[in-house]
Length: 194
View (tube, rainbow, N blue to C red):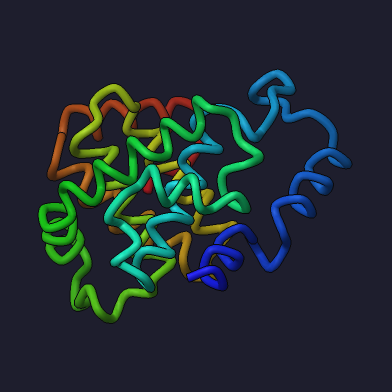
């Protein structure tokens, strides 16, 4: 379990400290006005992905999410309390609706069985579908874009397209009005709608 948690603390083979140092060299993020990337929903979402990914290898660790957080300093020490709370909220939501989420993945991943989908992509899809279907407070576009960013960061060169395709199809069937509004907004910005 400790080895899995240590692996989870890395993205693209880099430790969280190395990632933080690389981000600091790039300068402040432009979209969020230079806000600390270890705070907020993006950090919580990234951590939720890492926890879900790790739980795929050690499902018995899901007995207590709070104890998981308390016993995983490599994962939780460098993020804000609000990001940690958001992470635990997402993980609990995904685990509580796992059967429904997996049914959606199966429905929208043509010719792919759950067991054949890569663990990284599966964790990302589960997280994003939970947000899309069960969290109306999170804009659809944000859920999809954040999932694609996670796929770029942690997956291979095909992950981004695979995740985006399934999420787009699932979003359109789950909530056509919200999906249509997200596609229209993206079209108005001159970006492809897929």
